Image 1 (cartoon, rainbow, N blue to C red):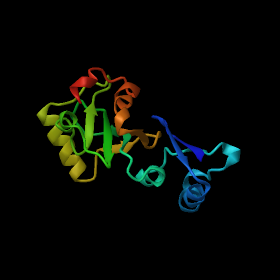
Image 2 (cartoon, rainbow, N blue to C red):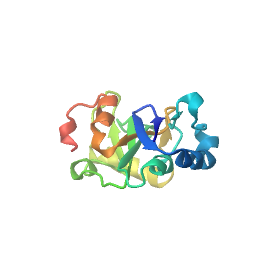
Image 3 (tube, one colour):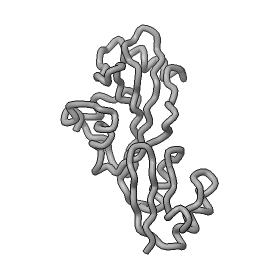
Image 4 (cartoon, rainbow, N blue to C red):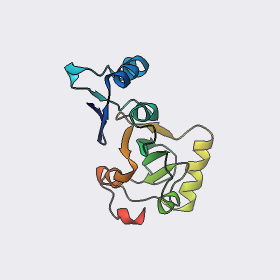
Length: 163
C-alpha cells in the first residue's frame, strides 16, 4: 500500500492505496492537481479541486467541501459566506437551520448574520447571480468527522451552536 496525501488550506487528508489507483488518478486529475509520484511523496495540493479527487481514493468517504466567499450586497452587514457542500453525508440539522443557499453568513468579525432583511437581500442577489465571489484560497475539504476544523479555521466561536 502507498500513502497518498491530499492537502488543501483547510486540512490534510491521507489515504492508503495502490499504484494502479494512483495511475488512474494521474490520468484523470494529474493535469489539474499535478501528478502523484515518489518525487512529491505522493502529495498534491487539492485547493482547486472538487469531490471527485477525494472520492477517487475513498468512494464511500464522507466529506465536506467549503469555500469562503466575499459577499457584496448593498445595505447588509454581511461580509463573508462560507459555502458548504456535503458529500456522501447530510448537513447537521442545527447547522442547516442557519444556512442561506448553502452559505453560513458572517460579518467582518465572524459573527453570524441572521437578520431576516439581510438574508432576504442576499438570497435575492444569489438567485439573480450576484453578490458572491470566492476568495483566493479555493476549496477546502475535511472529513465529515472533522467538521469542527472548519469552525476552528475561521475562528468561529460557539461551534456547538451549529452541530
